[in-house]
Length: 200
Image 1: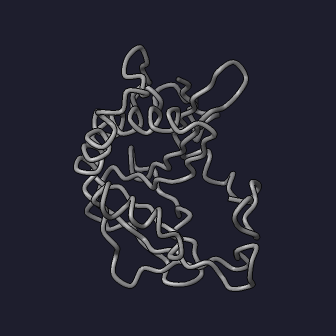
Image 2: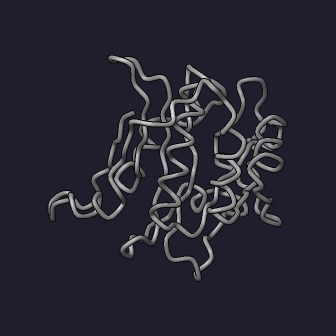
């Protein structure tokens, strides 16, 4: 985020780590791809997600969803590693029966907009534009506008699997991740919000 934008910091972002499930693809000590999914309402976990703390048109996850995830924070230095990581993250979402996915994109990023709409089948949430104080691009002083998108988690996950299924550079076997229930059970009473980090 800091490479493309000004105003966001790791310190600010860390407040959601305790509610997050982390995926990482490593070779030796080198991270090739990472992904963080922020869980909400699973086992009655309640807090304000990043989107729900925006300054303008903040977005509230609808009450009728029980097991929600706010997606985002995908980083990568290797495209095959990123694709592999996304494939396993999507499988994990389906297996663990999450029922709602929400994320957002910079309205000026046509590549991500096209990816979300035409590849992943996510749709814009009407009038849900997010802005954060002091969060601008490096090129100008205008606040970055983020469009919220959401969608059916199974359709989203299946769309990713279909889009990636013919890619011969993706490793599709030999990895496993703890279930979200195993993650919850592994936390002690003194470590209620411990984030889980799973590595390929």
